[in-house]
Length: 464
Image (tube, rainbow, N blue to C red):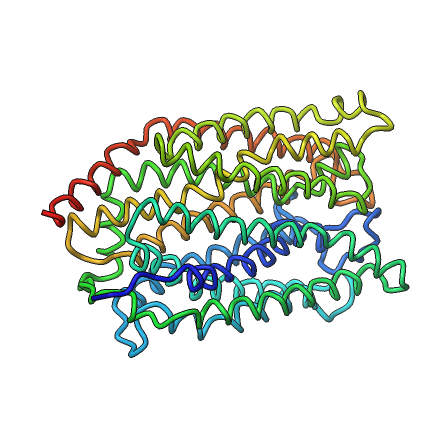
């Protein structure tokens, strides 16, 4: 009989989310800020400032191509994982091989070695960004696919994803503190470029330790029963997943929600420093308010999802985010009423986004795990990998859409010598609000009750 996964090993498995929070922060919050800098930041323009078709920036082109190349690997890795016959299991070997490439490729993105405005720098950044995305796929698709197998109880899984999100958001808070650490290093005499690189290097080192501890957290075969491996081709398996109505509807809602979240994370520093006119050194306090409030809201979200369903908290999150993005569009006018008290407004802003940020990080993966479990019970085939691949594929499409649109929209209204304009910053809020509204519509359509009752029905059959 298989053992239940001890909580200590579950927590250790969640350590990868600390690395994910740090690394996502480097990409989501600082990639554009680093390579499409404002004069105020003091960073050099490492990439060419020319635009394709007059509006697509080099950074937008690099990230878009990188994500498209990366997305192709998702179903391939999922199929390899689902069919894997490694002596140590179907999932854990992937984590152990991918951990170091995942971390090191990210760090090298920020170490473009050539002169300013260099095409060679663009090639360097593009290559290592693709390597980062692909190694992320090799680590997290098998890792996410393993969760429904090692934690079969839906309520216990909500607890797992809560711990996972606490780790993720806690590390994100440390990543948000990068501006504080960078300012300390600049005051100590380092240039802005090397201050940022030093901070990124420290965070990557922490991430490597967490990834390795997670990858060796337990022996997979001690906690996973013999599974029925799919025999279908990658394309056919992909098609079978897309025939799952519950999965498609919820994934579309998750996709739109994730795009709006990516908009927020990508343009966040611009919202705080340009719209709200808060100093870069004080950004951390705004983000700390958001993270601390979100963590305090976790028990409330978990309680609601267990007592009622997971749909209600997500509906509230999408509605709140839609309002937030509407406010971002008029953010400069709101800030004009808080002259001299900009930080207070920033903290209010951070508290306002805390709930949707918490709910969107905790619940979608838990819902997807429920859908995966029901599919396995109904079909008798374990396709956890391909489901995770489709979800990750959609997330990467979301990031691609967000990065391409945000990078290009930010440049609207930029004056000579600047790469970001005030009008562009405001327009990103309007665009994100549309996606958030679309996510609200899809979550309304999704039938959470049907999925959870279906799982209970099959479990009751097993008990009898």
